[in-house]
Structures are given as structure tokens and as C-alpha cells.
Amino acid sequence: MKSFLAILCVTCWFLSMASSHAQALLSPPFGLKWGDTPERLFDWAEKQKLDVSISLPGHQVDERHIVIKNSKGNLPSHDASSLEARFNKGRLYEVVLNYADPKMSFDLAKLKFNEAKRALTHQHGQLKLSSKKRGTTRDNFTTDTTSYHIEPVSGLFLMLSYTEVRDSLRKTSRATFSIIYHNDNVIPKK
Image (tube, rainbow, N blue to C red; front, side, top):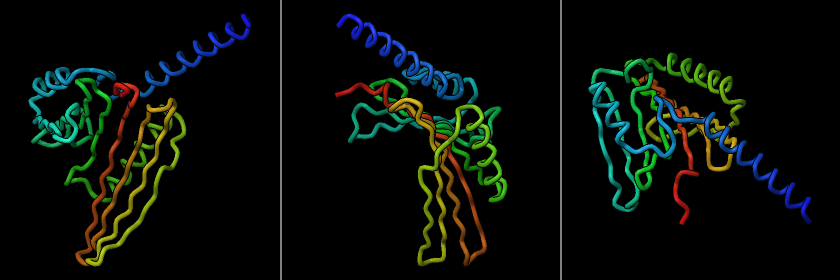
């Protein structure tokens, strides 16, 4: 019985070490940390003279959503056009980097998406295909969406999502993508 308890303790210790290591690997960008308060983002946005929007969803009283944009273009020293952060009870659990620059061509967006996928795969390991959909509307719009993810620990994941919209009537196309860092383990269990 004592050896079983010893093995159980050692196993739990290894699992906790693997969990904390995976969370460190999937840390949110811009020097943020899981569980941070919104003040850190506000300070950064103020120093960089960025626009901040705060959403307080009425149906989710513990939630706070913050969107940070640069009215002059992309975020400072970064290709992302905006950063979205989600907080539950004042603790950071999700960061989304959006790449939706209206000046970015369709081909450049696809190239940047593939570069981001390669870099994230190199940094975090092989991303798995999550979803791939194609749809066409009556008004000649075709939408393709693709997403990839990696989840080293239950509740902690990184997702890369790509959307392209083609208007065959007007012969235009646009593509955007997002990188989503998410950690359910920060959200208090009910």
C-alpha cells in the first residue's frame, strides 16, 4: 500500500510539472501572464497611445472583454491589427491577436497565415487541423475557414484560425486570421 501511495505521489508531481511547463510554453503574447489583471494591458495601451474598448457583457457578469487597436495601423512593433483580451473575475484567460489590416492583400494574408502556422508549429509542436469549412451564399460570396490547434494540457490551447471571403460578382477577395491563446484553467470552477 505504501509503494502504491509513493507511486501515486510521484505520478501527481510529474503531471503537475508537465502542466506548469505546458502553460509556460503557451504563455500569452506581449509579456502578459495567465491570471493578470486588466491594469497591465491598460498601462501598456496608454504608454503606446492605443485605443481601448471595454465590453461588460450583461449576460456574463464575471466577464470583461478588452479590445486594443492602433488608430494609425497595426499594433506597435507587431503585424497584428488588434488584440482582444478576456477576463473572468478580473483574471486573464484568453488573448486573441487579429490580423485584419484592410491594406493587406488576399495573397499577403494567406502568406502571413502560413508563416505564422510554421512559426507556431516550430515553437509549440505540430498543430492539428480543427476545422475546415467552405460555404457559398446566394449573393456570390464564398467563404473558406480553416483552424488549427494544439492543446498540451486540458483547458490550455493555442488556436490559429483563417478566414477568406471571395466576392465572385465584384471579383474581390479578403482574408484575415487570428491567433488565440486560451487557458480555461484560470477560470474558477463553479
